[in-house]
Length: 342
Image (cartoon, rainbow, N blue to C red; front, side, top):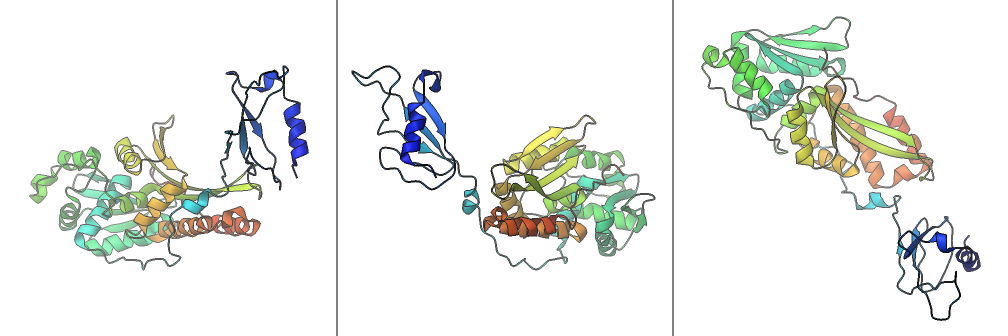
């Protein structure tokens, strides 16, 4: 407990060097505790007090007064969760029966994330946990085969049938956002083979279609991390991390610009990574993925991410029981496995 007499002792021990370099303001850090001090200062637990140095006529050197205009400024990290958007605990019913336009956007995003066009063939890579999606696509297209990749926890969908490729081309045409897959179609004369004009990439990301869902399905990661923290009474802070790694920086730059939050970086091998650990970003993503669904293991990872976000909006990440529960959710697996190098 910090009482007024103790504060008086602190103030009495301040010297000329205790003031900031501009000679006007001094910051005092307060310890946590219960206390009551009347005007002119208002104290806040774990806050910071800024005192106004004011020379009074006749006052001896080294003494000072406290301005009645002095204010207390505090950054309360414990209550920041209260302003986060609330979401329902009830998960929207999963929709796997997409319309052709919906499926086309999802497939375009998936191919831009982890697929490529060769001469009369399409390859898409899936993590082992998402293999059910590979078979769903095979069933939806009606052509192609799914193969296990040797020594990898991954599968490959390959379509070499012209009828199947024509169906795929008609679904994804004009729905790419970057030039790379578009240029593959041009290089291998898909327009002449299938008698379609190859439409250019949009160079834009929308939250009103399935493209981002497909792109995230390819190489997105929903990660729950619990790190040690000296500023939290439980000793831990909780982070919700969303990230995507790609060779092509264009989709990631578009995503970074669209969300207007997060960071974009490039590692020494040339791989680009978009990453965000902000709760506000999490809220935007949940609003999107509740409408435009993921599949397989990636969908399970998203549900865990979503569940922890709800706990955070309720302040449970600040309680020991909540931390234990979040640890239990997080240690049951994450989507950090990337298949881009396969």
